[in-house]
Length: 549
Image (cartoon, rainbow, N blue to C red):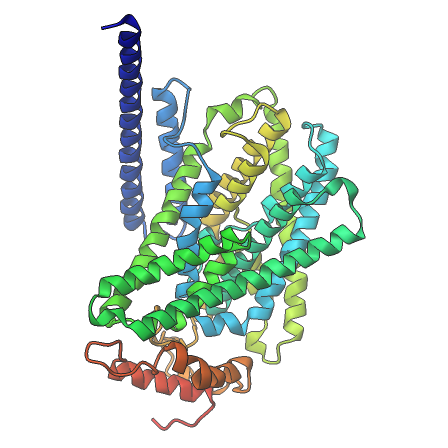
């Protein structure tokens, strides 16, 4: 054999061997990460009754402990099993979380408060964005943390205006606190979408020549993204409902209709990414539409399967995110460049945390007062205790802030610029401290501000056969307490929801299906008799009809 051929074959064997080692290392990392996910689930189950700790905090703590162990075993070379990639977060982990939130949300409660939600999520985020950006510009220039330009300061405002919907959803429960849940959760979705749109606009616009035309173009672009993303999500959801209703896959295979629902949900997110829209808004409204129409067009077994499949995917994605954030917080590469000035890094983190507190308070309380002016009934108004709860529950920052910070300030997971390194480590510090401290104190705070008889009085669900099962929460043990039906009879019937239901029954459901409009076919998704009675009862209450019991 020629020497050249022997050399080439030797090199190829070496390369192949290195690839095998790399593949084996990846397999080991995946095994360890899956084992950690299982550990988070088991520990979360054992600590379920604990009022201070939720699964987000458990995953963060386990991630931190794992990072310390990896640091010790690798002698300070690494602290994580995978490199954080914002594309992994936005493309694979965020879609199931946001979709499941829209799929499981109580639609009547959500849309009844839609104006307040948009007020908090859109205008409130803009107020917080301005305060954080101006505060960072004022303080950080005096601290001389590094070479940050105007775009970086505006990006900081967008990064830290993004509240963490994942944490908030684990803190509040929509059955126990329906009004607060719909407001905090709805604001979180709109807030995330607004923050991402702001961040992308900052990166796309030329900020060196700021004038009125650029500002108007920026506002127009934001409104276009908001409206177009919402419409796209609705259209994809309606398309899935129409296809499943007309073809009715369930008569031959329930697997096909389940697969189609899952793929159409993900397709809405990727379609929004394809057209440079807000995928968060798109997949959220797709989830709402699919729960209203598509879910009722599938067989009974497929309903159970899809409900638990979407919830499980969301649950695993949430744990994955916080577990990795905990490990990545100890990445030695990031902290190495700020080790010479730890005081400056702590100061930047403290200022950012203070700006987050002030920025949220600056819009929650004024906009709550403004929202109360539009409410006629006292039970629809937000009192001071509820306003404080909304302010506190939205203080947590999470993976969205991390992903945006990585996009703005890092390349390949670390940076050699001192200013960028400080911003990355400060973002990690704010995310960890806000999630752990505020997350641990939120449940006890709700218990203090909203005592049990007051905040567990949840309203009767208007979607008894929606993905959330039909429940009638007990108000109290008091025999004189008003019944849930009595509460509903006090609600004015001439609302947007009332007219929407009439339009929905007359035009939408006959075409796209939904509860009560699916023709009877043996084995088809027809309603259970008791469920149908509950449906008719709730609809009669919504129309302010008299019911004799």
